[in-house]
Image 1: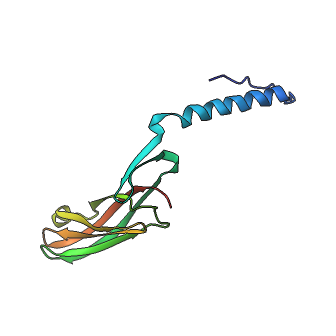
Image 2: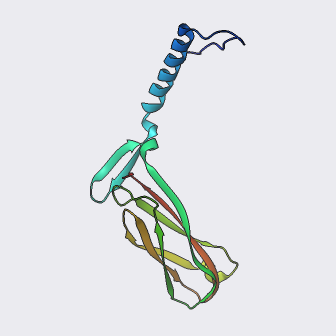
Image 3: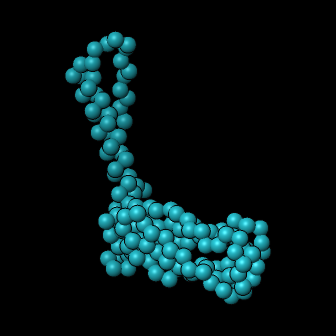
Length: 147
């Protein structure tokens, strides 16, 4: 890519200099937009694989408090849901990870199952495999095509 010379202080900007700036910006735009690694592939259940520019994809990262110093029994479950502030065009690809924000062993022994992934929200269940007092949040990452 061409380097644009820096103007001297007080130097008037002429048409030639603005032309050089415009060319350099266009070259940069061409380099960035044509790179294959700037694309995101999202495989949707209803429309198959969608390849879009990464800058045009939508990524939502959130968390949901499931239990805060709550007493749970072994094999009990708690439901959670995370709403997206604006919906996706298709149901997104979603991952959910439990995080023990407390110190109990019961908080370490949990599992998460997503029960429904929709364009506007995801719902799931946290299963507690041990009883005790737990503090657990679920981190959620959704990647998809914006509406």
